[in-house]
Image (tube, rainbow, N blue to C red):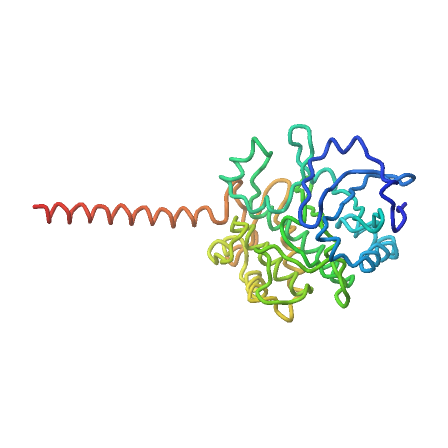
Length: 345
């Protein structure tokens, strides 16, 4: 059962569950509050827009998104609701003030001292050292490359499904999705009010954070989604949320060359054409890397190579580089000492 297309703020009911969540609004939201709607079962989140977002809001386009979901066949609507925090209704108080969305499944939250905090995809960029340092305070764990790829494969599946429905994701970035690996990798896409019809206009202005900006001025398109997704893969595997430089050696430790070619094609600058079939095959293959017993990677040299728990794709390479630098410094220091002694004599 759905709420009306437009719900009055006065009809929203505060709930005791609000105390269980630790939700920090970001992007366009001034606040994000759990609530119920009178006569409608289930929990919602009221995403109240900030003033800047309201100034640029296209109310007709937002209501079209709400209606589009309602008009989907039941199977497709269930798929959308399982994958995406799509606007279920607009909220009004002397004009539209925000939207209602369904919260992510509870398994995509982490319990921090009795409050549930969302597990965003940017956790996949953390190194073993960083994850261990944050473990006690934030419940962070380290996700090895097979987990990173299996989760990203789920994200890719959602992106491609939306493309097939005629929508571009637009604001595709690691903070705009939450995930779990238990009992299996799964992803829930957030901020879906930034999605827009491929041949139409979106409800919100097309804005990217600095580290996700396109290489040239361009509108949000399926091609721009692939560009951003490719950077998400690179940044998760290289364990740096802001890198702009692919590490070919690190990537080759956990990806076959055919997947590296897909990344390069998209990183060259939101190409006009994307090999969607090869991307789909890549994303599906990443799901096979995680099993209850073992985790694996696929490379050119091995179709199914067991991956050691706790091992990073960049760790050994980084240690090798840093070790080389240390050796060089020691050698140069020794030379300097010899030269000083010689000249001093």
